[in-house]
Image 1 (cartoon, rainbow, N blue to C red):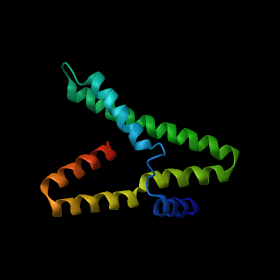
Image 2: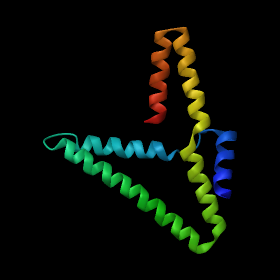
Image 3: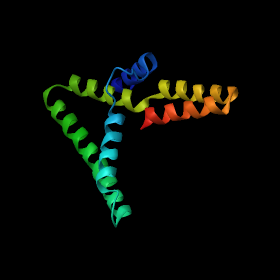
Image 4: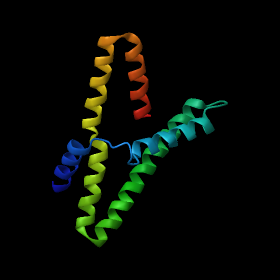
Amino acid sequence: MDSLLIGWVLDLLLGDPARLPHPIVWFGKMIAFGGHLLNKGSYRKLKGALMAIFLIAFVFAMTWLLRYSLASYLSLLTTIFDAIIIFYCLAGTTLIREVRAVFLALDRSLTNYTFCVIHLKGIIF
């Protein structure tokens, strides 16, 4: 419960600072690398499905292993790790800010809206 509260407060205060590395960006880069490597020839859908399963399993396993390793040393480290994971997964402050910018741009013009959507897509992927 402490880690949930800490992660939520961090999200409210910091949002997603551009200067911090973001795990979602890393995941997007892994997807892009796999897509570049596997998205050719035959069985593209099968290769894509297998890559998706592998990436999800890999991230889950690495997160679990790291959390399990930290728990064996000190429970405070596990709480900090959980809070950081929650902070990155929530991303509510940044999402609200970016979606608001998209709607404001749409009110101004379709061109501004298009640039905001491209920017938002760049943040997500």
